Image (cartoon, rainbow, N blue to C red; front, side, top):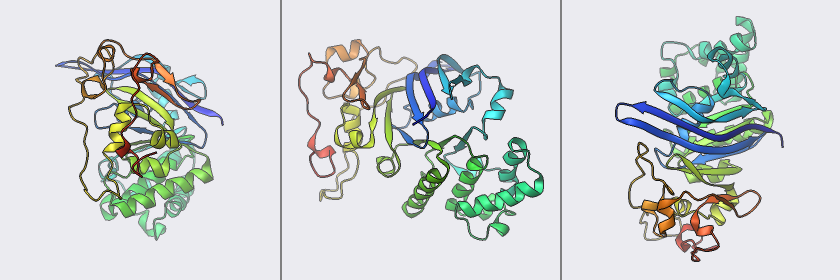
Length: 339
């Protein structure tokens, strides 16, 4: 498959009164045409900052690109001017934001917010853009699109607002769609509908999707590959099957262990003890060492290199070093109680 996005050694910081917050540290991953890459991790792990960096949506200052590159079709978009990025956003890359009620303009009709990009990037007339807007609302499953296109966001339900956000993001047929926790504020029935909609649209358009989430249930249903982030770093990447059935990093084990198990009568939710690291003064070694029950002295002192378990899976963990003691993942992290 054609590679449409490649992030290499990306580091992004925020300069605050309290000091420099190193929100993203040496993050690397790639994305291929027609696939869905899920980026998972708890709040504060750097997921949203990473994708906002890709879209160049961070205010600079206080944000700063410290190092690295973001290649789209081989071209480094970090070096582009703001005017050049205006041509990329919407046309080459679209984004579905986390909360559609705060992302949609409450003073503009839904139709105006959809047609804005069509007029700017596709050079459509207002009439043609309006007709395309109706088609897009119909495509994302909104009933009576001819009427709905003239309504305001407050007249839509939560699920309909999210569908409208998807219509806006897809209006110019972007190569890359970034979905930042697109189902967080929705009930489980609507979540399933939104994920199914994204899957259907992807099959039709071959759009590559970056899905940001902390919900591993969403990952299981929607993703092809997964990047696990912690403390501003990617600690493990692999296919969905590798993540769920052959996880290697203790943090990934913790995430899987915190998922409710349908076959567990105790109904006792597991958690990861401790708190995430302070990214104003990040640890020298593995960011998860302070919370890891298997941590060794080397974990505190040195950040491990990525070690490959397969052609698609790599993990930054000293436990995979041949000199480390043998540690098996806890059995309770697997849905069936074991591998």
